[in-house]
Length: 192
Image (tube, rainbow, N blue to C red):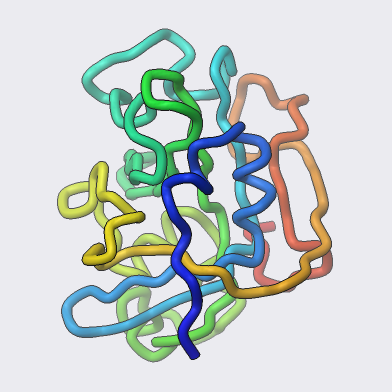
């Protein structure tokens, strides 16, 4: 089955809208000859002026990707592990969506091998876990254009209808009251 890839127009919108509408999309990696994918079941939005965003103190060498072209990756390291955001908004305006969790679809064996995990619920239930399982790294994929037809990482349409839940973001110490975490209601593959 061939799914339609997401285009730059999808990402060149309000960060909150993109974070919600990424739910149910398929994140695919074709790396080292292995195809692996998962349905996006959890996201977090980081917007301009957001105290919890890496961009809260302005543009720096470390966060400049979050100010860049929408539809590109902004991969950053937390506690020594790579995590992937997708840049949103118009170029020059900071905004990104952290991909927090996926439901495994394809390449389950290679993802289990990459993570040394067998239990499906734990395979992609966190931003660093999913990057490891899909072989997404800051070194190789920083500012990767997800909209390029030759990209080894991309997103496609997948689920037709989703039921979206909204909660406070997790794993942060600032702006914890913001309802910028979006989940697929009732999905068993959420990070927590």
